[in-house]
Amino acid sequence: MPLAIAGTILGIVSGAVGASIKRARSRTDPLERPQAPPEITADTELARLDRILGEALSTVAAHPNGSFKDIRIQRLIALGVQFRAAASGHGEAFNGTGSWYVAHDAVLAVPELKEYRAVVRIRTIERTREPAELESLRATFAAVRRGVLVERILVFPDALWPADQLLPIEGVRSWLEDQQAHAPRLIVVRECNLPAELAGTGDVCVFDDWAAGTRELEGRDQTARVVLDFATDAVHSAQDRLDRLSHLGIPFGDLLDRAARGG
Image 1 (cartoon, one colour):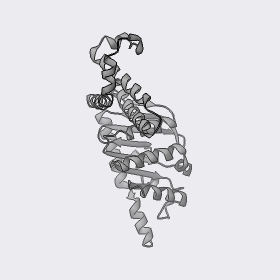
Image 2 (spheres, rainbow, N blue to C red):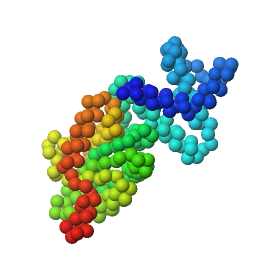
Image 3 (cartoon, helix red, strand yellow):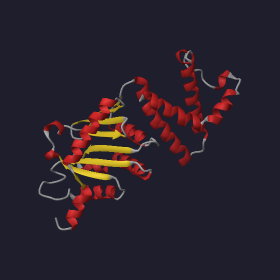
Image 4 (cartoon, rainbow, N blue to C red):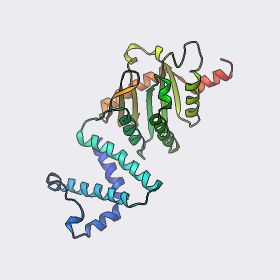
């Protein structure tokens, strides 16, 4: 996987900045670009990669502000998340609630992404109104419009989805209906129906079959740690967890149909 990621980075970046690299090769003033550290310049391939990445950033920076520039910056950020993980050989760890959305949304924007699956714990109604959560949903909807197959598994406590009610409470229901209108596959699960081994599940997501993200929670909804992992066993473990949760839940669209028929 690290070689595949590096190949993707080099292919996309080098294609986007080919003309800039040609201009760079014609330069004669060594002060035009900061020199790379000796441990990089001593290795031919690392020096080449440093030059390509540097020229990519310079090329994007030279564009006028606007959507064209913003899209390319977002793609480079997404590739950078993968690049750091590939370089370390381990999952990429982040701290703080905001970091979950930064890491998650960056990888979700990878142009080659085909499938995205996630389980999200909704413990308070405030979670559905957080600006970062709403922005992350917009990133998810953008992925759907690009043709990405999206499945979201949403786990609710009794306070948000009472056992004696067919549908979650009003505020949550309208939030779900808005997502349903953007065409992702929504699965809803009652927290009380989770087996013991899944009861402590935090937020988990899988990008195709090559990356898994986990958001470890503390307290009610606070992020303790976020990890992006590209190891095969971590991805398979996350996929297994998602499969089990999906089978425990029910498609939200089916609940709406039952409600329309009077239960």
